[in-house]
Image 1: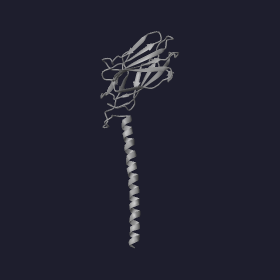
Image 2: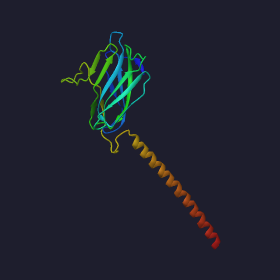
Image 3: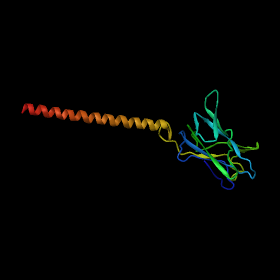
Image 4: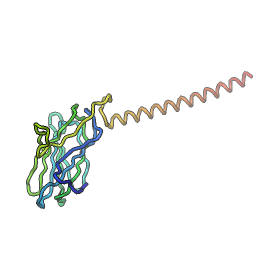
Length: 197
């Protein structure tokens, strides 16, 4: 989604509700801060070696996930404009969405980013906060993670949702079967009573 960019905006990340060790969706907001007519044509995000990383399809962009050949874990994802697409124009921003996990068991995770423009200029968003706590010129995108849940899969996993759904379905089926058996039993008892009478 393209939208007007806020003044002095940086590449940022947000992921409401995600927990340590869990799976979920992370959104990277990428503005075009240039004063020229160049457009943003590429974004690379460094990942903390994730087992799963699935970028959302975006019209005019193509995504490629790089994996460690030894562990098969995702180490980065790069979005680039497709032929004929212009990218992110000055004063605009683009949202890049990634479904990923399991996330590290840490209170916060940074995602160093590289933003490339149509004239070849690149901006590295990889700086840690300054010693006095103030924001650096090009801060690395960062997300905060909630404490790990008791769920073995972590917060927000599709597996947990499916497991819960399967359990509910089984419980309903067994409950329904038990009710049918109970009704049949009562009916049989009634017939036997009438025969004795």
